[in-house]
Image: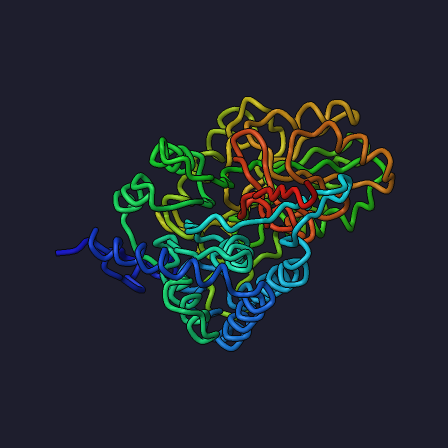
Length: 462
C-alpha cells in the first residue's frame, strides 16, 4: 500500500484531504516526462512562454472564490482577506513584463572581427518545494519565472496545502501547456530526499525551516544541482523618535499579526526610541485588542487558527519562558474565547520588559506574539536588530530618509523597508542572509538564478 499524505484542517481537526504519495516508478515517469518536454519548451519563443503563463494566471483568477474557502480550511486564513490573488497577479505580471529583457542576449561589440555574446540558458528541471503559509505566492515566486525562462517545473507542495498544487496544475493545463512542462507531485519526506539525491533535478527552490533547508542540502550533496533557500526569519522593526507614530502602530500591528503571524517577513520584534516608547506600546496594545479570533470561515473573524496545534504550542512555550524571565504581557487571552491550550487557536500577545536572553526575541516564533523593547538611540537599535541568526527583512520607521539609509547600510538582512513592512516587491530581489538562506527570487536577478550563462565567442574575420 502506498503512503498517504493527510491534510488535517486547523479549523476543526478533521482530515480535509488525503492523497497517495507517488512510488519510485511513478516518480521516474514524471521525471522522464519533464526531461522529454524541456527541450521543446526551451525552444518555444520567450513571448509565447510568457503568454501561456499569463493564461494560467487567468485560470487561477477564475478559481479564486473556491480557493479562498479552501485556504481557510487548509491553513486557517480568514476568508475576509480573500486569498492570495492580488500578490499572485502582481508577481506574475511583473515577471511577464521583464522576462524578455531579463533573458535577452548580451552582446559585446568592443572587438572588431569577432561576434561575442552571452545567452541565458534554462537549467532544465526545476523542483519547487513550497510552504503552506502563503502557498500560492511562495510557489509563484519561482514557478512563473522558471517556466518563462524555459525550464520545466515539478512542484511539491506542503502537506498542509495539498490542494494548492492541484489548483496550479489545473491552471497550467487550462492554459494549454504541453504534457510534462508543469507537474504537481505528492511525496513523503523520504521520497523527496530520494528524488533529490538521484541527480535528476537541476535546480531546487525550497521555502521552509532551517532544519528543512539543511536536509535539502544534504539530500542534494554531490549532485551539483543549484539551490535556492528561503528559511527562517526574526524580522525586526525600529521606530525612531521622528516616526509618524499612529502610522507606524497601524502598520506594525498588521505586520505582526496578519495571517496569525505566519509570515516569512512578518514583524517579530520591535525596538522603539525611549522618547516614544510608552505611547507606542499603548497604541499598539489598544489596536491588538480589537482582533477577533475565531473560525476562519466566519466573515467577522480577523485572526484565524494557526496551521497546526504544535505551532501554537511553540508560541505559547516562548511566551511562558519570557514571563518566567520577567516579561510583562499586555493582552488578556481570556478575552479571546477561542484561545485554548492544545488547539491551534491562539490569541495575539504583546510583551514588554523583554530582552535578548529570551527566545521570543531571538528565535523564530512564526506566530501571533511580538516583543517590544526600548532603545536609547540608532546605534543601540542597530545592535539589537543584528543580534539574530536570521536576516530576511527589517523595517525602519522615520521621516528622515538619509538617517534610515545609513541605518539600513548596517543591518545584516536581505531587504530593508522604510515606513512599510511585510511586503514583497516583485521589482526588487527577494533574498536573505545568515540562517535565512541563500539564492534570490524575482526581479531580473531571479531570472538569472533560474538560468545559466553561456558564452559565444566567434572569430568572423581571420
